[in-house]
Image 1 (cartoon, rainbow, N blue to C red):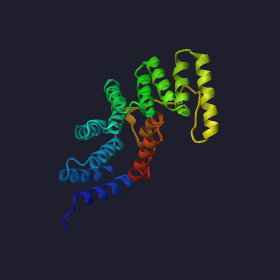
Image 2: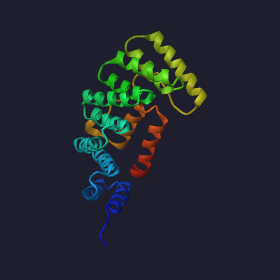
Image 3: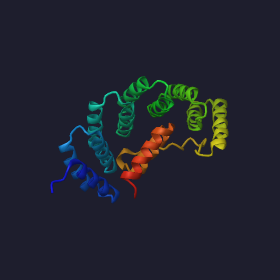
Image 4: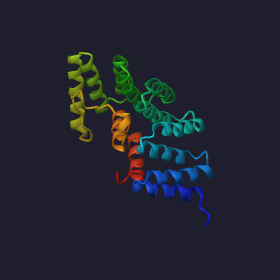
Length: 227
């Protein structure tokens, strides 16, 4: 019996769970051939390419997704992560600027942009974005912690101490995040040695918004369950 696009997609996901990513991509290809505009197919193939450290191919899929849904802030933010891992922080920031324009009252848009700004060397800009994030969500311990790290880098020691103190207090209250004043806590991802763990680590540094963080966790459970 002839397989449908969904059949190929389901088979691809099962192969990914067994870490057979090359084989999975063949089935993603078949699914996409039958339904070229299905964003779920493109999204998951892009993540499989990431697992194989094929950033350029992953980026092609994210570009295709955004061609289909140009005003989807979630996909723009996801592509920004891929661009960052590929060393293109300028384009990553352009995506995050657009995402912030689309959802100006969502704290995550500013915390994610702050992270990339910091990596691009704009520490003051990063601090400003963390402050905007905190203005929108005063209970965000991770944003306070990351702001403290940025302030520490610029020698704003007293300011950083206040940020870390607030982060610790909020962490104690919520007991669901880990914060630290260690300036090496957020590691640079080596784009030549990319793994799912690296990608998740980077996104965790970006994602202080629970809904988007949970969406990514749900994706990992379905695609890279055994990673």
